[in-house]
Amino acid sequence: MKIESAIFRTSALNLEACPTSRLPEFAFVGRSNVGKSSLINMLTGKKQLAKTSATAGKTRLINFFEINHAWNLVDLPGYGYAKVSKDQRDAFNEHVSGYLTRRENLKTIFVLVDSRLEPLGGDLAFVEWLEYCNLPYSIVFTKTDRTSDTTVKNHAKQFLQELATIGIEPGNVYSCSAKTNAGRSQVLNHIQKQLPKKSKQKDKGPTIQLGWMKKR
Ligand code: GDP
Image 1 (tube, helix red, strand yellow):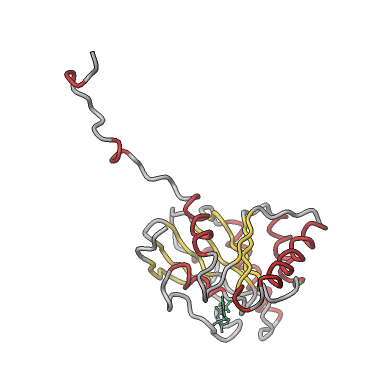
Image 2 (cartoon, rainbow, N blue to C red):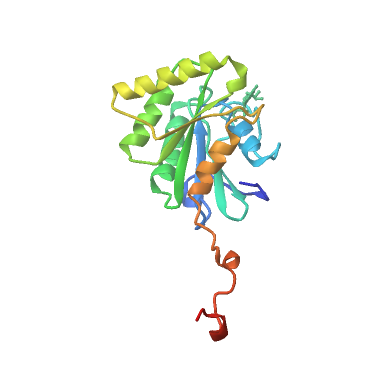
């Protein structure tokens, strides 16, 4: 998929404040510092689209970007940040879960997991919750350039094994590096496949045949 345009539309605190849109939507979520902003910038080819390295937990809004006038990319607040009170964390969970469970045009939730780390309880619990709610998600291991291929593979294997022990088998698993662009085409293809097919009418040639064009 070629990214022709990527426009910031708005930020929303909760589902009620989200913009009305019929475009298919793809959300990105993960722990703070997992590399979400970098991945969004890498996928869209826009270095400043999502802000990188903001103070952990500072970006608590749901950010909407319209891509190619064809789909929405949604940057969800990072979970698991420590610098906020329990009340703030509860409000965050309520807002994000409200969006995830009730947004009708949401096609895939990309759950970002840091490939440098052994499986974290918070990430596993989040995937378990998505399964419980029957929501469509894919896992993306991030920052693969920061560690060896073997470590990435081992951490991914451990993560999937942990899920398997509770009977969960994620459909799509990707690994990406915002630095080398690895995994970019795979994630964009995943999105492309879920967009409505464009009419191929134009390529088919004339749709009306004149009488004299028919074979005898
Ligand atoms: P966010 O908090 O999840 O949005 O994470 P950021 O995108 O701000 O990334 C956190 C830190 O990790 C920043 O210093 C990024 O430059 C770095 N980072 C993110 N993704 C990658 C990656 O794929 N490769 C490398 N080498 N660094 C990355």
